[in-house]
Length: 201
Image 1: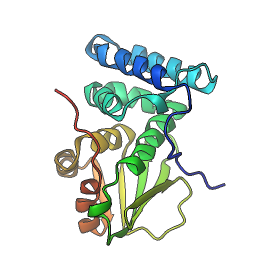
Image 2: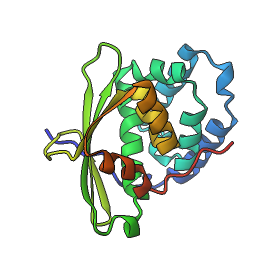
Image 3: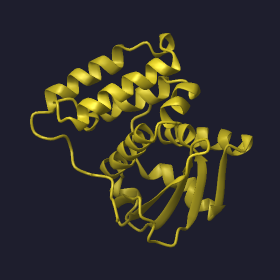
Image 4: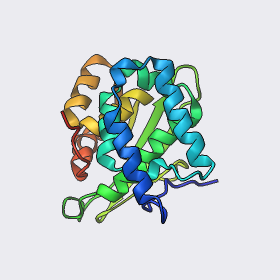
């Protein structure tokens, strides 16, 4: 079954809730949380989201989500990624927002497919394909295109890559944590197609 990452905004009535979730995320001192506590926090938010209890990660601002991921330690992100439902939640939330932040002027004459192979310990890798074409972006978990480039990395590194840009990609390449097969030019240009907010200091 083909599943696309949802590209709509928050549901009606979630805007205030989203601001409250932003305030909570911004106030958190993640350095004081153990890996287990970080996982419990994300699991609680995910549970409330699935229960339609008025708390939704999709209502959170992209800036707050970027800051949360950037401030989390690699160990915290790895611990969250070890839980399949949290790994899927974080990855698909970022992929969904990429569609909202694609820059039309930079992609007017682009037709490129990036395949992501996202690993997490001994778990079966998750595969996604992101296609950027003529100012639009779509990500699917059902690979149907022939990719121009395939990027393989651990979930925590994909998350950090998405919010930190090409400087992080270079570091991951040098250390062997990110593997690129195919058109390196597409991989090098890809993150420049989006105006995802930079993490705040």
